[in-house]
Length: 223
Image 1: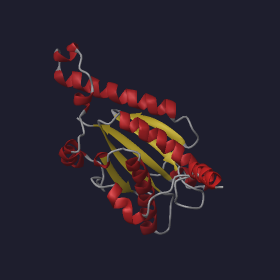
Image 2 (image 1 turned 180 degrees about the vertical axis):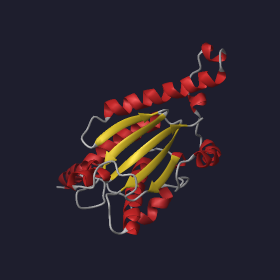
Image 3 (image 1 turned 90 degrees about the vertical axis):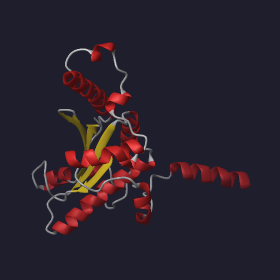
Image 4 (image 1 turned 90 degrees about the horizontal axis):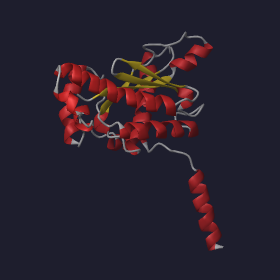
């Protein structure tokens, strides 16, 4: 009988989905994260904190070839950053061919767009089973390409109450950040913001509102 109970507990434990920790513990998991926009000034201020936590720049992460010693230094460095981020983009793109997810490129920035339905339960703020799978993929790739900063931004559809929209979007971003931190992505790489209904990417009709409820990861190389 005892062996049966042990077996059942293992089976049930293995079937249990991801559960966000109590909100009171979020700050512990996100120690070192910045709760602000990821602009240039913020990145410059963040870099020594990131490096003090064992973080490396792209130049320190990439094996340098002999050709980088010749020619224009700026051009060589830009090529190195572009190459590093292209590999990151390609891995994310190949791994995230799933409904509600997209990977985009802007210069050396890589943006992962995740609509809420690909992350959260339908009628609850908790990470869903699909969200668990999707974020596991993202976290594994982010740990591999660790010479990067990450802005985690939450967005809602148009809401009458601006304060509620900002709070809801920040909650979504924070839940994703906590997941990534628990999966081993260093919080010292993270900038976490909630932008409410700002920057809609679709119309505010029934279908568009579902798309506007989203979390975006903007990933930049650490120079």
